[in-house]
Image 1 (cartoon, one colour):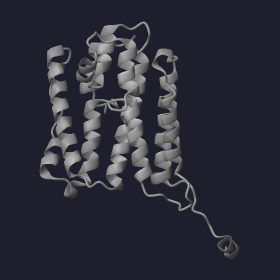
Image 2 (cartoon, one colour):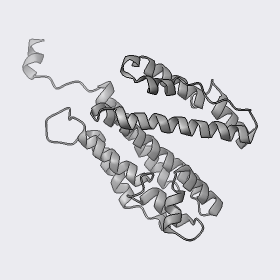
Image 3 (tube, one colour):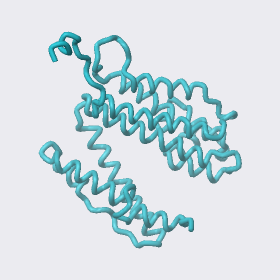
Image 4 (cartoon, one colour):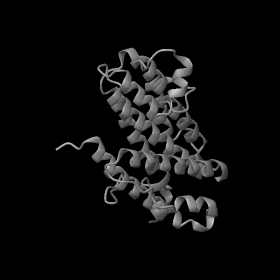
Length: 248
């Protein structure tokens, strides 16, 4: 049987056994950062090591309070990251991960809530999820409409929560990373990011076909895997000198 929203919230906020639940993600972050404890400021560690917010399962007010507590916690977390991490390749990879995750979430949520049959309430939820209510109200004096909301969420380069903003920043971060081969060619992940950006440049909200955003989300997953292979797993073998092969 399908889960109702209140049950989904209970699982998300309190189920330690689910891989994507809040308690599991917080535990994973503590585990990773515990190995770097000597490089982390005490104030930052106190935020990371804080237990999840308590709530009463099935009580909407209690769960909302827990979510507000988590938002404040993560905002403080983000503030420490923004102020204290050296802007080197390590920071670039952190930003790349954030951009890919945000872009993927935008595609999946907008694909669901941005259907023609959905009304102003669904558009309002979409604005809330991507923190764009204030921007929308500053530009439009009408209730949220599908085309205006999707244009703001997907294609507005000045909206820091938009899809195209994430991809533009992603391209910039990838272009700044050190190259692994001095052959004058852009790295494979950078080429893939440019493909996604070109896809967005050709996107028209009024003619947005079903599945188009899912296709972009698939490209983002492929990009993430390409970044991992290129910069972390190092599956490709380095070029070998033919004379060395003869010696073997």
